[in-house]
Length: 448
Image (cartoon, rainbow, N blue to C red):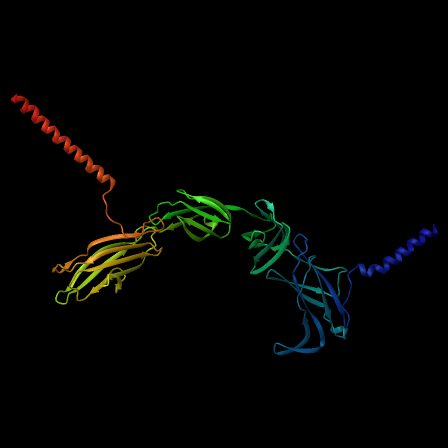
């Protein structure tokens, strides 16, 4: 009995001794040095890491400092400290005032998170036994999940912009909890394993269900046509894989980011960039060379044998690359072609010939932006004394893409022309034979 009574008495005494530590303490006394414990939580009581905390407090009431053009009592503002993953931080304040009647025990607390500042006042006369706890009621805990085609990613980086402030986190694993302010947020998730970014724009409130990012492939249709709009067969190589396309193109699935690829068309190789976000990409291959039109030869001065040759060049087709150059050559006495001066006013090419007393062989070479070339051979005919005439004996050849023949093209009768002529000759023979037979029957037999 006495033993039990002794235990009770000792426990009561211990409780009395610990009571000051269990209740709020008054730490406001002259020349205090205190380390204050702070904790910041969201609207649901979850800890908020990386909150900036600074305190403004009285350093001395009797010592004045010059501030903003006047002398004032010495108040200090601490350098910002940031809460840890538990939402906690410690800040030390030092007061040198010895007169207790002049002590200012209030401390101004400034919290800052995602660009917004929160202001509080605490008192050293009422210091809690554990932490000064501050609640940011407009901040919510957000669950972030990142997947790749429905499968968890090993790690990712999260970038968020909210209230004019940017923040980022490196995360190991596919799930993460982050404290975000209510309202509009934007950002993206970076998947280093695939070198991919996925952007998002969300609105956070108390009912927000969380951020789910799933890196998925999206369909992209690739089509290739010539400058006239006619489909061409092609092969596109992406990430080492080859895809063949024909009349309707080819459909492939890619992650939603620009990616370099190689396009092969009729032996021509092109470097291209595919952008799956577009849904469809069309490429046009110029396979036809420019044409010469509206060629004119005008006698400028008969007495001086001066002539003006003019012409236009056009690159036909809705998707033609356009005329890149036009050059004029004349054949000299040495039998070689020499480039001749040619002017251009934006629509018409013009060459001036002086002292020309005999015909001049000319060659015009047209090229488009794709390098398709057309060669026109002609003659400046000066044998006519009229005020105007035209180039004569012109012939054209072209080098169009990989499929075109090179060199001059010579006219020759087609197979169809030969067949038609043969049929007509046979019909003629049959008609003549029938007439002779008719005369023989009608007249020779009658004579007998």
